[in-house]
Image (cartoon, rainbow, N blue to C red; front, side, top):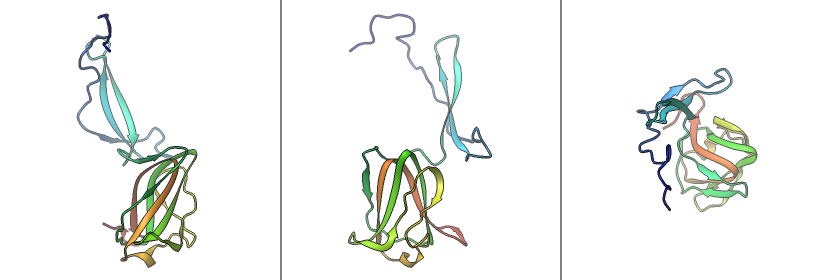
Length: 168
């Protein structure tokens, strides 16, 4: 299919040029929301009414595992972690949610480590399991994680130490 016969505004080359890089900027509600990542683009580059626009995305949100409303499951490979608490960077809709289950290396559920539902939009939310938030008893041994998601984006997860900040 072609763009049709040439008319004003339909055969224009190079429209919407992006500026260089991402810039951390305050959110529209700085006291209520975390900073955002902004990038700038020109619109209508070939016309006299050229406009520079700012587009904003969530911090640490360039890529995610997305699950539709019908839901899906994500299972990690076995890994070893260090830390005391599991933190999530995620976003769900009002009807969406995430459950996290910690499994042994063979894929069997570890008693007490199935989470309560996590919902909302947060860069750094602690996961609350049936046994609470402390996962340090499992540190240093191979585990797997199973995420059950419904209408949600999972951007990242991280294990942290409460007294010493983030682990590597």
